[in-house]
Image (cartoon, rainbow over all chains, first blue to last red):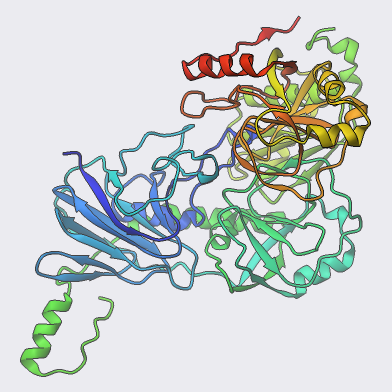
Length: 346
Length: 252
């Protein structure tokens, strides 16, 4: 039997994503890819994959899978609680940013992300899926890429490339990825379409992420950004992070699955270093925007790349005495201890 | 006049351009003229030239009606160097485009269940047959793709058919719908919400992504529409189900 993950339960949006699909925007295909590409890369680093590898992006609702391979090494990254690794006789709590190995028949439960839009699950060796237009990323609107062009559902079998995870010690990274409360912007490209009051409002107000947000973009609620001219212009190519302003003045921050072209003016654009952070924003979160220069933006991007490049060298050996809830329960019974709570292992 | 006949088009004399940053990793090359086929061919040629330049750090470029957006990695390709490589292309010889191809797309006017043909006829003061005849009499140019994968903006629509978008967009326009709005015509490649007026239906798939790594219609292509009746439409659908796809005639 081909090695696989059996999907037991999947929330609203669990998709395969890699670093994105480039070269097809001229044909109307958005890049897609991980909303928080730093989270995706970290999950892959933890299991020893190339940083370009795909991962499962878990949005609302969580994920439960069963290992249908001799052994499966996995790691999660993102604003998510510990994964539960359930075998016949124990349940281990595997914190985010730490690798672990599941054996055939073990279940892995990942809760819905908390304090962030997404979490990532990477598997050593990666998924045995065909690329679509050079990428594994799922673009559901065109049923392109990933697993049959759609989100995973209970009953799916997601094939893996490796039937066995090599014996080696597990690793962890002492990092956190947090949803931001400040997002940095550069003005433009259509800044001339706005009155100066719009920039004052943009840089001095708080905006809230509304429920109408998805992988295409974050619909924000805040003071209306006044346009100098109400007309919709000829469509231009859009870019990730663009703050597009429709007639009602409420900006839309464009994300990975955005339409490749649009006629609404773009008052400003999120700098590349803050795109992964913007991807962590979820409904109800509030943000402020700060203007930075191009030089600052490049400095921040360079710093972030160096940080990512250095992560593989910062992997630490994970603790081997993973506590299981059964062990704790046993301890409770024997010792009469009343603190039943299982905590993250540090 | 051919696509590469730069002298006749006067490309070298230059369109007025502006460079605008879309954040730190994309550059919008904006042309001040409104859209025209001449400008479109120039933009497509420029895009083509950049793609073939194999410049390290250049990711891709996306042409639109009167702009070209270039995506790049600013830690590999400096903005100054990108601009310096684009500028000679703007003022020097006209960059050659891909040779254009001409397609004939069959349309069952008024067919396909969802149709606004009657409303279009009354809004334009024409009969339904006249609308179909006007629409299929023009040769269209693919200015750009956008909105959905494989959604080609075809211009220019005969002036008698110019209508604004529908006041209320449809929740679902079926794949293959041939529609008009805002001086353009298009074929919906996928089922999608849409605000254009539907003239009819074509059986030709715009982009079967399981089989083709590029859409049928690409920027710079020319398109004609040919009215077909229900039995011709049905016969074409059978052929397509068996794997047939139209081939383009090379432009002359």
